[in-house]
Length: 153
Image 1 (cartoon, helix red, strand yellow):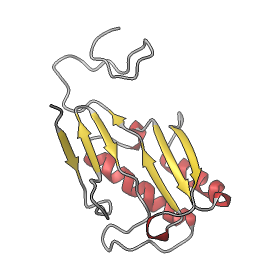
Image 2 (cartoon, rainbow, N blue to C red):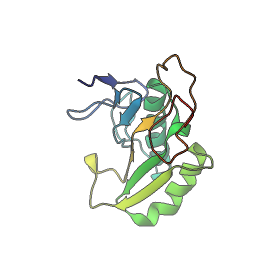
Image 3 (cartoon, rainbow, N blue to C red):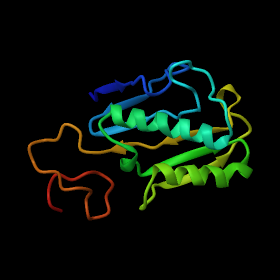
Image 4 (spheres, rainbow, N blue to C red):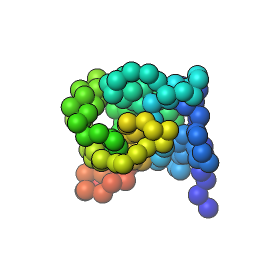
């Protein structure tokens, strides 16, 4: 049976429904999507799309850190926007949080988001060396598989 370990931090908003901020299963961490809520007040942050996108990435970074990683470990994210005209501003903010090689990304136009916010980001599973076995971490498999290897392929 697989053990699921919930992950939470005060650096990101509490879940506004029946879900966890993140869940670790083995070496993989699944992060929930984040909207621009102030974690201290649970209110939507005031400001333009850049301010709100920064809050979203700050929350995702806090959850990633609480699980033992960082935004640098992310390989794929999805950005949901109510207004695709705000795409250039979101791109600008993303470069403040990520460096090349950038993660893979999809941006999706949606009719609405929770609490009427204009932006939500969701990160696909993050996998990094957490609680390593006794063998040395060797990185990702060089044979094209997507699992982590603790041996030479």
